[in-house]
Image 1 (cartoon, rainbow, N blue to C red):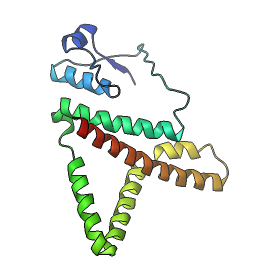
Image 2 (cartoon, rainbow, N blue to C red):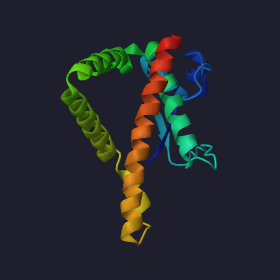
Image 3 (cartoon, helix red, strand yellow):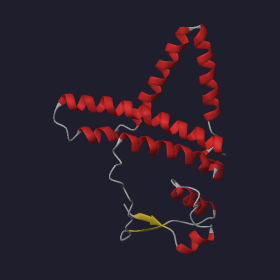
Image 4 (spheres, rainbow, N blue to C red):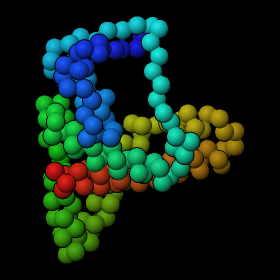
Length: 174
């Protein structure tokens, strides 16, 4: 697959990279160029380097990364509302608060809420399953594979929560 590129003059014409974005600045510049009417070039001889820190597989780094992406996702949404659309965060907060209040009087609602959240996490985990699949293909022991899937699912839940907290902080800071 050929790598895509834009001319330097085009990037400078649309204002260059947004230095306020620490992540997802590539999406910002691509959308600005697309909005300005520029077409992508492609070439086989183009090489891109992306810095990957050594600690990227540690849980703390993964959760920090999820929080950061959630935070800057909200900032990117304000720059390109036509690309990202409306934020569902206020609706999620209100729905969660209402369900939590109702569950105080009707405990069954709490279990329904818990089951629906687990279903949602399972759906998102299934959608992103290639990461775990790539991990377990190199394992031979079945117990290790089962442990990796369980740990991956739990980590995915924490990842989703961290990302939503990042979106909430991004929304508050705006």
